Length: 119
Image (cartoon, rainbow, N blue to C red; front, top):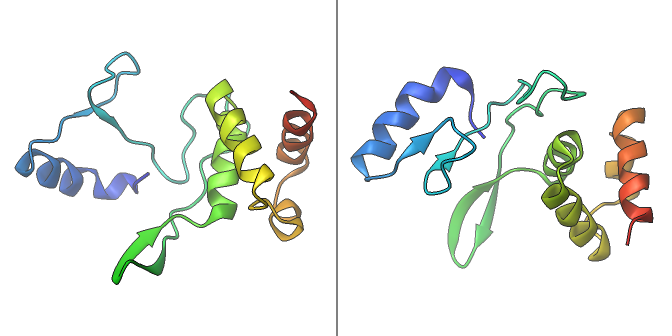
């Protein structure tokens, strides 16, 4: 996920490293970008969360990650089967906390509950 205003910079860096970007869902060999604060499809109930990465230390290096609360929101908003599987996985290991649940809109909270009820 990137900010739309950063798209040109991302394209330049990607091309410098031989990475191909695509805006087609059918192009499985390319990296697909999502834009923060925008909907992927008009029917999406909420826009993607804002881009607010957090720095963490991992294996002696500083890396940037998306906060779990934003990842959960993004997965519930898109709500494809693969996103539902990811939600179930995150939930089963305890990543979806009551604090995260309190940040969800009523629509997304319902999707979370629906996902939890599926086998």
